[in-house]
Amino acid sequence: MLLQHDPFRDLDRFTQQVFGTMNRPSQMPLDAWRDGDEFVVELDLPGVDPSKIDLDVERNVLTVRAERLSRVPDAANAVATERTWGVFSRQLVLGDALDTESVDADYTAGVLRLRIPIAEKAKPRKISVSSRDAVTAREDRSLSA
Image (cartoon, rainbow, N blue to C red; front, side, top):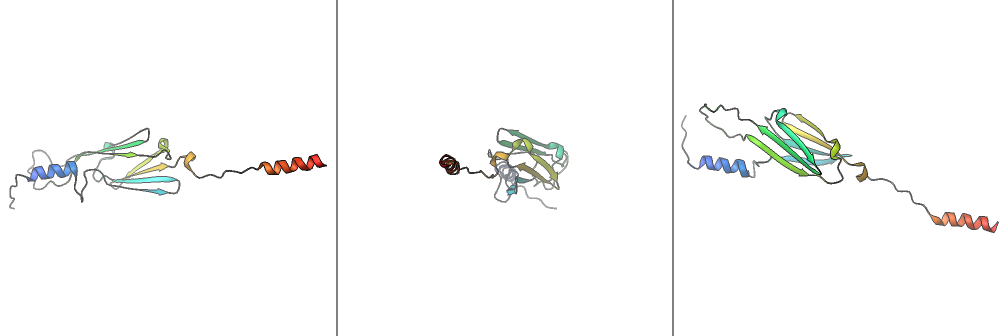
C-alpha cells in the first residue's frame, strides 16, 4: 500500500472536525417536527455509548452532549482515520410552549430521539362566550310581568 504524505492533511482534517463541512457538520445533525401534542427531535449519534450521552435543561435551553471515543489504539499504525471522535455538543432553544419538565429521551440504532410535550397552557382550548343581553332580556321580562 502506498501512502503519500501531505503536510496540510492533518490541518485540513482538524479544521473539518472543528468547523465542519457542508457534507459533514461538526455538530450532531438533527431533524425536528411537531407530532400531535408533542415536539420530536432526532439527533444522529452513531457509535456513541448511551452512558456517554448527557442531557440538561436549564430554563428553556436543552443541551445535548455526547462523547464518541476513538477505537484506534494510540500505538497502532493507522491507515485511515476519517471518523470524527471526541465530545459533541448541541444546544436547542425551546419555546415557552413546550413542557421541559417532561422530556422523554430514547437512544436506539445511533439515533437519539427526544419527545417534548406541548405545554397545557399552549394547547388550543375553547372559550365560552357569555352575553349580558340574555340576562338583561330576562330581567326586562320579569319587571314587566
